[in-house]
Image 1 (cartoon, chains in turn brown, blue):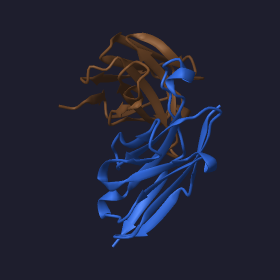
Image 2: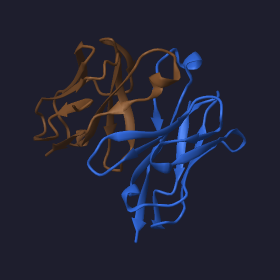
Image 3: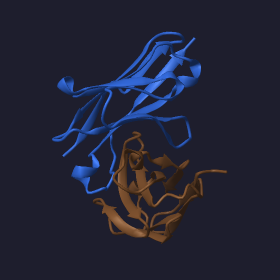
Length: 116
Length: 118
């Protein structure tokens, strides 16, 4: 069983479209994240949810809207896609709390988004 | 603010040779430090982490790293490279819970691509 899964794996779309990426984890974790990896492999956190509550919201255009229907799912919706949104988007999860193990994040396989 | 610098975007070693991937961090408080590995077309996998205690930490696949506060470094090593070690390696830093409010935000370095040749 895949611990953190994302769909779709590849997404090719045109500028101006709206698209969603879904993420699910079966690890029983309370905290989930979205990261963006650009063409130079640089990884940057976008959002984090703890038990369906938004706890980290980095400087991300408001065209990006995360949504967590339950603590096992964190989806990312992107409106009015732009060329610069092309990247690999990774979902991750971890346990919550202030113990060291909560800092171990488990990553999904990524979604490669290409905007043309 | 915290930051991570990985020296060398590409490192190439021979199979059986020592692997040394360099990571320096900047943090105003004692940090938590991590190394992640990304194989082609896959997500990131945790190799090892330093939180507190012993400064030499051992991880999976024979990798280890040493936290050196005086040098603000957390270099990753492996005594003998294997072809399967070829991947992208990321160093990351985070604030400990008492400083982060429990929000474990990872700040990643730019990554080092390790190539292993026969």
